Length: 299
Image (cartoon, rainbow, N blue to C red; front, side, top):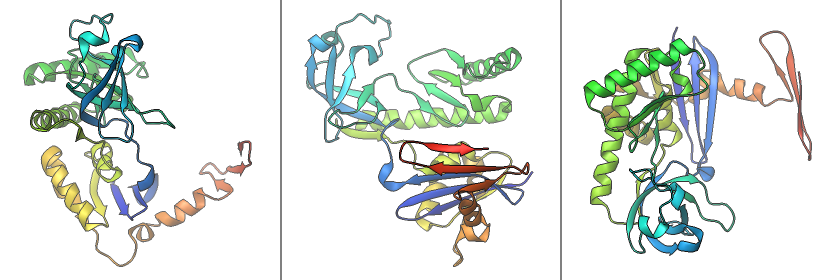
């Protein structure tokens, strides 16, 4: 199976296409103006503590202070009944992660229980256990994943706990180990920034789509990744050199005058998918109608 990943960069949006044996399998689009904050990690400063609400407001550099409830503050002894005044103090520095974007007049919601995703798993640095997604129902597969993760974490002395995501089902041992090493390097770099940075600083932003595609989509079956933006290509090479060294040679810059999506027929596939009637491989089709109250799909 031959697989390629195409990354098209324009000012308003980034588009990624997965091509398998010459056929478009997946298209992902991220618009620049609509990037969220969920997953971002900050070194913030507690600006107000409210004992009556068991919460605190934290300045992380946004327009409004973010909200941190006592139940979202990780404590090693697991005493969830601790008072907010025992956990944080006004003016104190704290490392937090956004779990909910700001909405209307409300600020972002925070947690100190950091979690960092990769393609196959999630690293939870404060925890020490190994978990498997509940969506993986096969007992044999769950046991296999637990054995691989536990063995590698023990032999590598990797701090933190790991949760195997649904995508890990059927993944090879080498790919899983690769993911754990990537998360380990990333968490160490975040810790280094946190130790050096002043309060109200971004320590880690969830990757833009171009780099997320490298993290989540590149595997042994991918022959090459083609990027039509030189600046994004340079960032991708640096990212791969640091976190995905085995994929460094697969990343290519596409300087051609013809748009890369036209070259592979991706634009035609996008236009077909956006039509009112969408043809299916089985011979059937979908009819999509949008009204003010609802969107209907007739199969």
